[in-house]
Image (cartoon, rainbow, N blue to C red; front, side, top):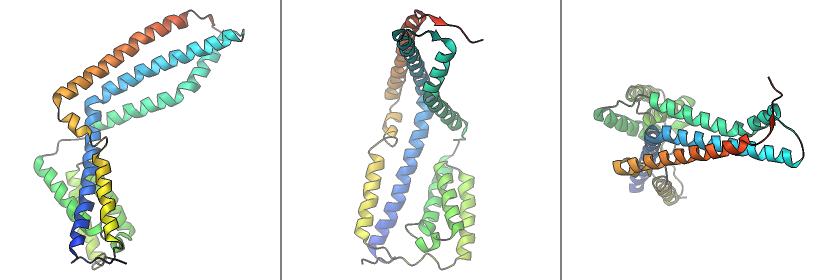
Amino acid sequence: MDIVTIDDPRYADYEDLILRRDQVKKEAFEASQDYIRRFGQLINDRFAAEIACIREKKIIAYCQRMLNRNLPIEDTKLDNFIEREMNEYQAQLDAMIAEKAAIDKANQSVSEYQMSQIRSIYRQIAKRIHPDIAPDLFAHPDVQDLWAKTNSDYNCNDYYGIKDDQVTLNRLLERYQGEGLSLDIPDIASCLDRLRKEIAEVTSRDPYLYRELLADEDACLEKEETLRKDIKDYQDYLVTLKKETAAFPIKKVGN
């Protein structure tokens, strides 16, 4: 077994890669929020327009099926059928709208100084209680709670929250003084390779790649124009579908 101590130069690489992995995950999370903040409303509007077309096509298919079977098309049965069919689509749209509203509501006014402090404090905490760096110390439930809160504050750029985490860290280190300092890392080469692959995976796909799009204002404007065109196309298509629906003899039996 390949045992690594703090003095081993590979330990510094291991620690740096862990922090780099966490950093790119944070950057991906922030890019996802920025992407939704910039395009979320248009994306939601496009999906709503698409859902409206799907709904109308299902109405047409139901009506045609009833006619093929020489059965009456009753509005209440049609409504019940469509409600069941569209529940999943509507739930997805509701979730997208809620996510956009939550991101818009979140406070993003963080100064450059605060951002640098957030990164610095996170690294300080991570070096002491990260589960891959200090597994013995991380075994304590209150340390696990601190780590979960630290990650949440880090991802949300909560400056005051992560400052509080720093105080909690000092208290926990006093309580468990001396723990988490021994390191037995089997197969360090494999661990380093795993972290490099995780970093490469995150940085090679969305939402991390949204960063490139969001940095290009012309590309953003082009995407917004494409989304608006998609919405218009769906709206025009819906008009055509509704004309087809209007031709069916739907019997009103409900109130």
